[in-house]
Length: 194
Image 1: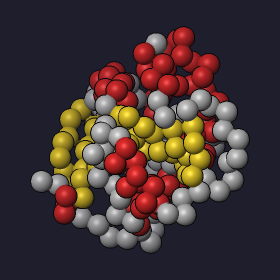
Image 2: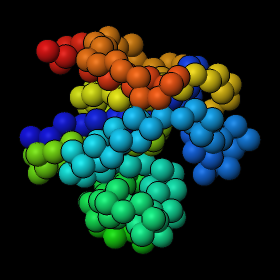
Image 3: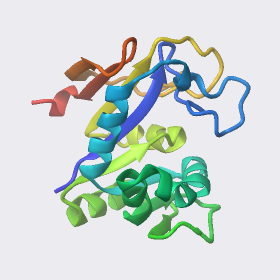
Image 4: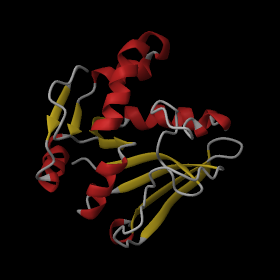
């Protein structure tokens, strides 16, 4: 049975929006200011351990616009990104162009996640997708958070835990540097951490 893993680039002030600059915000691209070679290796290992991606529409559209053309330059990483199944939670996406993509309205998010966990033995990877992550949290569906913490205060932007989020206790499972100033923090819900 798979586990649902939320993987985020995150700033010190909790911003997860536009870390690579592809969304066109004035503050985007903040991750590129901090080298994280070990972080890139980790992201590759994380992708290899995943059987399916669960994405929100905005993240999906950014990925779908970039990854099909990047396979030749990114090798095995790009090949895996393009070949693996992708499930997009959206009520507005109707004609996904990226191969191996299905769309689910998210009307029964717990049922969707339960079905994915039953179908796939590897991780169900949720990258970015701030609105989807908030909904997953509300239903207590996240098994693990992998946060690549960057030493920057972004200011504006969507936060992983926005005001009004349901309180939750998390347990630290791992902490390690993945760059000179970047940390990888892995948390699990405290009631499932052992």
